[in-house]
Structures are given as C-alpha cells and as structure tokens.
Amino acid sequence: MTMPFVRYRGRRLGEVPDDYLGWLFSLDDLREPLRSAVDREWRRHVQSEPSTTLATLVLDAVPIADELVTAGYPTLTRRHHPDAGGDPRAKVLVNTAASWLREAVRGAA
Image 1: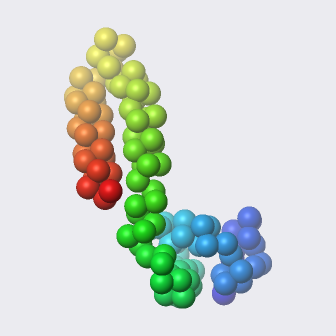
Image 2: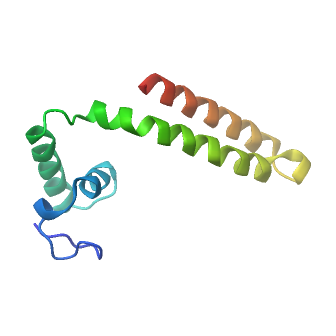
C-alpha cells in the first residue's frame, strides 16, 4: 500500500521512516484499508528489530510525556482558574487530569 498523506504521499509503507510509522500506528482514527496495512507494517518492523518493543517505546516516551504534562498544566490552570473568570469545576478537572497523567507516566517508567 502507498501512503496517501502529503509528507510521504506515493511511498510504500515499507519506505516510511520508523518514527512516522510508529506515529501512524498510534492513531486511532485511520480508515481501512490503511489501518490494517499500517498495523501489519508496524508489527513487521517491531518483529524484525527484537530490541524495539512497545514497552521500549513507551519507556522512551516517558520523559517527553512528563514534560508535556508539565508544560501544559500552567496554561490550562490560568485559563480555568476562578480568579481569572474560569469555571471552578474545570479547574478541579485540570488538577485531576494532571495528577492522573503524572501517575500514568510514573507507572510506565
């Protein structure tokens, strides 16, 4: 199958770089038959490289995930803070989501 997206349009899935293929694999909204083709190609790549497993990829992403939570938290806190005209319930949800994400990141490490 060839890629329908602009960046690698016309290239076969086997020619797409691993990081881009991994990103495609992580998407939940790919349509068939691309979804199945990406799944097959990603599994072929992972199986051909025994040192690369999903667990390894998750562990590699932990620092970035933590940085992402840390960077986004202040922005959402300011936006939803009651003193700035935000909804108090939304502020509680921001805190809850940040705590949950940090725990998930720590649990993956």
